[in-house]
Image (cartoon, rainbow, N blue to C red):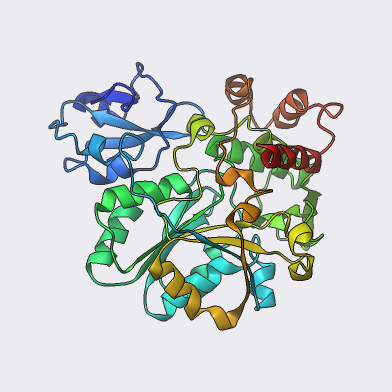
Length: 407
């Protein structure tokens, strides 16, 4: 295998004892998409934390038969076919409650409900009981809210690629949602374009460390609830409005009080937007661009208040990039449930440069992730993002989007 692909190599004896391999190299371009783990016929590849909370593949060299399927399926080493005729829309769901509970305009639940109505299955990211983010399959409407809302951490795919393939081969309609690199991994794993598959990715800033996410929850719980963890977390509350960076984070500890912090003051959001906790592959993301291998890309329509103020009500508007006939067909099926405005592609990402641009890694990233714990979380974030240099998260976003418009 190519040296920039494999992270760990471990023999069978070490694997059976549950040991970690002490000698490894970290390929900065590995996205952790799980395609190699899913394709391996010998099941001799595992995903393991390399020390920062991100999962990388481990290969049991004694079990490996050198079929090279893992290398051939890797979307970083191979090229996925891309779309060539993207259409772009600003969309708002007419269902107020659904839109209120969504990150932006409530488009994802509309698409997902349409698939579930046809007895299909929807894959997406959900919190588990410890607020770790994992991909799961949903087959009924009551579980769909688990997949809604922003989750600013890399999710674990697990066996979802294998499960999705099984459902597709049975003839069931499948909607798979994830980050662009996860969707690229799925398409590469499947090796063919299924007519009954809908893929939905998002405009991605980058994926923060799962370990840092747990440190953040522990930090806030210790400060706000005597160490007891929350019952509910909402990272994109619209209580103070959607546009112009007015949203907040909410922690619900189940005793009648919800702790809200405006996102300009939230320490995790400072680290996230400041690029100090992202996976290294996010700085050179191969999945960026208008043209992609997915049917849909969803995101916040930042700047809608400037371009089409008549369409903005400060409750959330989605920007939707549609790339396939089956994508357009699905959109037409939900047209009576939404308000839709066709827009120019370049206008749609004018203030949303993460569609095409990677987030540049913070120069002190490795130092920060090596040191951070729940106990020193606030101290370190304030050290690397002092108030005198970073007045607020809103300022960070505004500067970033001005640069996006320039470049």
